[in-house]
Structures are given as structure tokens and as C-alpha cells.
Image (cartoon, rainbow over the protein chains, first blue to last red):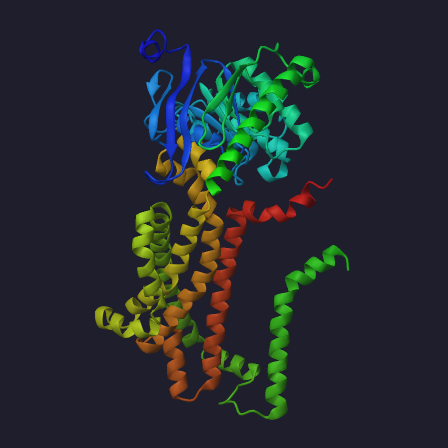
Length: 282
Length: 263
């Protein structure tokens, strides 16, 4: 498999590849956060990673984006080994982390001031870039809020702006770490629709880390279920449900069955982890 | 009370307090017949100010100039140190204990050394003002840089941002409220530094004037000198408070937000 992926022709099929990845914090005797994690995400695919809390889902984000080196195995993105921070990734977190001294428009445009080649063109083609940012804001329902400071926006609106900031430079890879975790249930469902629409329009490769199984089933093409620490992939589900999915469709039987199956798997890995911890204590 | 009256009262409060204090002061001196060489009445201080106003203004300007030079130097060095301490872990662990040590030394004890190196008058006054005021600036800028959210740093690093990019786009703006808060402390400390140095080693400045007045028992003149320093301190403080409100309004506007968007 790896040999095939190494060839130039095979590279586009698999965009993100993790092969036997291990991560240990704090030296050789430190905590093992990930162990033998193997997964691959095709170009343009929407992948979700679910698992019990503390299973190393967020570490996985940092590894794939190269913000943190792995201590074992290999990670390849777009056919190249990851050996430092990638330069083209869009990221969004549970905390929207908008800059309070910038309005919504300028917050959205922040990546354009950093990413090459945009940073050198920004001044010259300012109008074009502003139009582009406004269009994106409108696509997530923030038209008319361009001049508002972040603290004037509700939590859901801040998260929409954060999504725009992650996508303004047309990244090939979008990494989302519990982006809707702090929102109320209705806002969350609304933003699933927003994100699905953006993805259907733009077809970037997306990795979503979440503990919300309905969220994963609503958005993803493929769901990876992780075990408790040390995390590894214990199951992979292809989600064949038709798109665009709606909140209504989350009450259909195939959807509920899928969520139920994943729920059962996670219960099992949690129970196993609990037993292992108790055995260790005795 | 209507909110407009309340706001007016809010603006008038500092003046009311100062006037009240002067009135009480005057009343105590008059009632108990306190001698002018112990505690001169405000009217006596004002008379002394008018009598010696040329000398006072000349020396006040000298003090103000030295303070501003020392303060400017303190800002430059303080910001550079703060950025280095806040950005590099090794610089932090290397320099912080030293800085604490330097800051703990009473500056009055350093002035004789400065005089030995720099002579008397302007140079040691600027140096003392600088020594007193760079520390809070450095510490506050470093603190501001340390409060950048790690997630935001991740967002920027995964876009290919350099350390300098992160500093320019996030670190420095984030530390501005801390910087301005420190300026308000630092400017008053700079005045303290200049006057200490002038008292010990100068032939000009308010510190020197007060030392002369003291040796001649001209107590009202001493108080006039004190008053002038206080007024200069308040005036520069106000300048920086206004600058702060203009440049870092985003940090304090938060409290008004519910009012603004309440409709």
C-alpha cells in the first residue's frame, strides 16, 4: 500500500495518510497518547474522528498539520512527508479565537496577510480580496456583519466567522477540532448545514475531530472510531447516506442505526479502558 | 439621579475632591494657627508660587525634559526587553532574575554611582528616570505576549507564519492594553527618578529648587515645588490615558457592549 502511495500517480487518491503513528509526551517514559494509528483520507473527502475523551483526537490534529512531530510511524499529506508545520491548512477550534481589535471582515482576511502568494498581492488587489471575503461571509449568513467587532457577535456567529477565516485562502485541507462543541444544540445543527454547503461547493479535504456522533454522521464520508488512550483506530465506517443531508434526515433509520453502532463501539472501548485501569490499580 | 447628571458629576469628581482637600487644609492651618514653616496654608503656597514663578517654571521645564528623555528611553528599552522576554523562553529564564534584582535596588542608592560615571545635572537625572520606569513596561509587554491563545498560534503557524508574523499580527496588538497600563505607572515613576537625582546631584530642576528652599526654610516654596511636580505628573498621565482610550478601546469597550447592542 505504502509503495503504491509513494508513486506520483497514486498520490492524489490519498491526501492524508497516517501509518502506524505513535506519539509519546515527555520523553521515552512519558504518556503514550497515540499508538499505531493508521488511517487515510482521500482528496476531497470529509473525514470525522470520534472517540472517548482524552483519546488523543486533538493530538492527531497537531500531528497531521505538522505542529508537533510524531514519535513513531509516518505521516504524509499530499504525497509528501510531514516534517514541519504545513503552510496551507485552514484550522478552526472550539474557541473561535477571533482578534478583538479587528472587525469581522479583517478577522476573516487575516490568513491572506500570511499565506503566500496572497500576502504580497493583498495591497495591489485589495478590492478583489475584500469582495472574496464578503462573498464567503455571505455564504455563512454573515452578510451585513462585516464591520462588527467580534464581541458584538453571538457565539454561533463568531464560529461562522472562524470558519470563514479557516477557508478564505482556499486551503486544500481543513482541520476542525470540536468547532461546534461550545454551541447550543440548535445553533450546532444549523452550522452543520453551513459547513456541509461550504464543503459541497468547494470540495476541500476535511478532517473533523468531534465527540458528537450525530455531527460526525451528518457531515462525514468516513468516520474513524478511536480507542481510549493510547489512541488507535478501532473501526472505520463509510457513510453512504445521500447528500445534502438535512437535520430531518438525522431521524431516518439508516442514520440512527449508524449512530447507534458507533455509540456501541465507543461504549465498548470505554469499558475496556475502565477495566484495564482497574486491573492496573489492583 | 439621571444618567447625564451622573456623568457630569463623574467628570467633576476629581476637581471637587482637590478643592475640598484644599479648603480643609486651609481651615486647619487657620483654625489651629499652624506656623508657615511647619505647614503653609494653600494661599501661602500660591503666593510663593507667584513670587518665584520664573524660577519654578524654569526648573519645572528642566525636570519635565529630563523625565521625558528618561521615559522615552524606558519605553524603547522596556518594549525591546518585553518582546524578547515574552517571545523566547531562554531569554525569560536568563534575564528575569537579573531584572528583579536590578529593580529591587533602591534607586537613590544608585545615583551616587551614576554621578561618578555621568557627572551631575541632566545625565544622571535621565538615567535614574530610565532605571525606575523601564521595568514595569518590560514586564507588562512580556505578560501581554504570554496571553496569546495557543490555538491562535496554531492557526497562524499552520498557514506558514513566521515568529515575526505572529508577533506583528497578534502578539503586539494583544499586548497593547498591558503596555498602556504600564505607561501610566512608568511616567509617574520617571518623575520620581528625576527628582531623586536632582535632589542629590544637580544645580537645576525642581528637586534642586526644593533642596535650596529647604535649606533656607522657605517651606511655602517647597510645597509650591511639590504641587508643580504633582500637576506635571497628572498632566502626562492624562495624555497617556487618552492615547490608551484611542488606541486600545477594543480592550475596554467590552463592558459597554451590552448597552450598545441591547436594542
